[in-house]
Length: 183
Image (cartoon, rainbow, N blue to C red; front, side, top):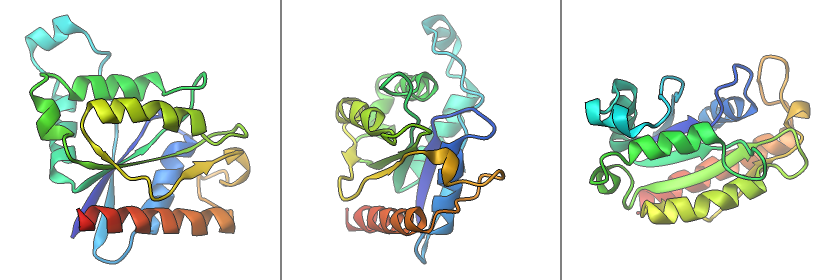
């Protein structure tokens, strides 16, 4: 079983990005699954807190990533860049620094995102690339999934309703799973 861990970079209850991850889970190919983790309980990074020990929510998320064959980040775009809560999570996951190799090095990673704006998280996705390089991940560049005008493609319950986006999402997750299985 190919297990991919998905993380939404939004804490909002009605998050388009969390909805996009849930939709992606429905399109996973046979023999694979997408587990969706939460970053809701990750505290703001503080070196003084780190000295007292890694918070349990961080340790739990590290274990989930380590146990998965690949990582799917679903990123909003805030002020033309990465969302602070997701970057904060990544910062915690690199503590202590020796854990970078265990959690991230060589790990296949794909990025997708949804935005109410017209550019569909293109700038956020690009801003993640130097971070992923620093973490020594293996980014997948075989597809792009940028959902623009997200308010018009999800219904009030967060279900994806746009057939063209559904098809694109299915191709995206299938391509990423294939990449993960080949490496």
